[in-house]
Image (tube, rainbow, N blue to C red; front, side, top):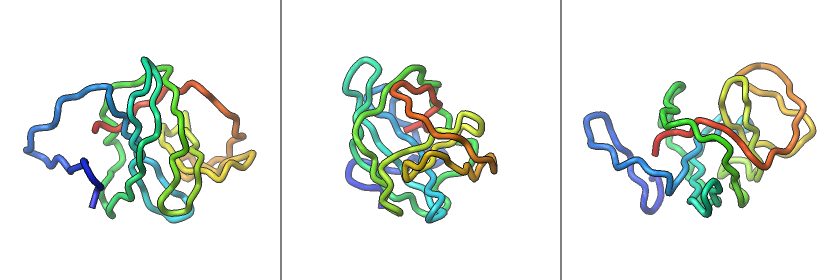
Length: 132
């Protein structure tokens, strides 16, 4: 159910080697109340190109599971289309440290913080990705 080339590593299984060849972002869809996994492939020293989006099964992610090392100053390219609502933009909340799909409006209500933020654009981001 996770898509070609992806498999779930369960507790007790040996995890695959960590590397920077792929970046996995756990993205929340506020419209649908569901999550998806956005997969990016390294395309340069600090650049990742969108590869594919996978709808995540119910209960697949839990808060606090972003366990990968912090990635500083990276750039995402391509459009990660949400499989639930079709949005092609993401909102990175620096306060609650979560990622949401966004329709690209001038402001965004963050369900995690319960606050409205003015949206801007950023070409270089710093974020803690989920371990993949």
